[in-house]
Image (cartoon, rainbow, N blue to C red):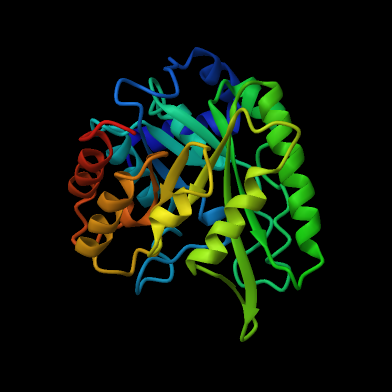
Length: 295
């Protein structure tokens, strides 16, 4: 294990106050750079119990392996920042990886993957005051709407409060909505275009203001129809990493050309590509995001 990780463990054990102090010294940048677009690396899957990538059920279980790949990704030109839970973002802070990067804190990880309470997306990670105190640029929340599950109304109320609280700090509220339903005992997201449009309408109306609201949406067939449903700035989520990478990148390229789309938020597809070339996958995504002007 590298000396950097030895130091990281020592700081965590002896000097936990260094996390906030390091955050205070972090060099910040505007949310949007010259291209007006964002490429963010997502690293909030483990906190919801999602550790698998393709045929490996524990690909992200090794924290050091995950951090190695995040460090490679964040060092590539064209990568604007990272989205993660407190444990991962604090590791990256102490490893000096977050200067001049957009940092988005993941807020609700309580709907654990595969659980009977999965639709109850409670806020178990960041809150708006902590995101502001850490000097981060915003917060992200999952907002799954299961019309047959009474827990959904709690999720909607909590997301609405979080959007409003982030807005009071003038911080991005990145909302990831889905219409979801249980099928065969599993909670599954409905990726039919009309379902995605309906989820956009619900998410857009959360909170007393939408001034700082951004959407994080899946790339689906009929994406042009989806983007007519909102005027809010939108980032595309990377989606299932098990698909053919060439087709995935082609779908991203097509969706990035739509009005209102401002970039990508991608995790496993770039951190664990089939050929294991993290830098190459990240560079290809960065070229897609920043190669054309936003509309």
